[in-house]
Image (cartoon, rainbow, N blue to C red; front, side, top):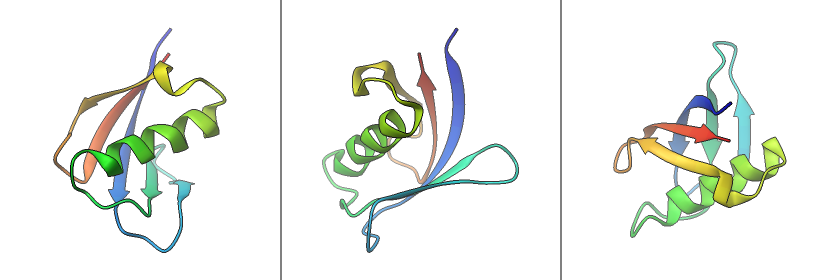
Amino acid sequence: MPRRISVKVVPRAARNELQALPDGSYCARVVAPPADGEANRAVIRLLAEHFKVAPSRVRLISGATHRQKVFEIE
């Protein structure tokens, strides 16, 4: 069953990092800039690695151009 998670994205960070927050959401810091979907792709790779699934199993549901995003993980 797919799982939806809320992620706050911080682009142009010093390093790629995924942090779980107490409310069940995540904060993703990525080196990639927020242009041409690069930051979104970097977050998808981080989430796939964290949840041990292929990147194709992680889908951006909402927030493509915002810092607050919702992803679905199969």
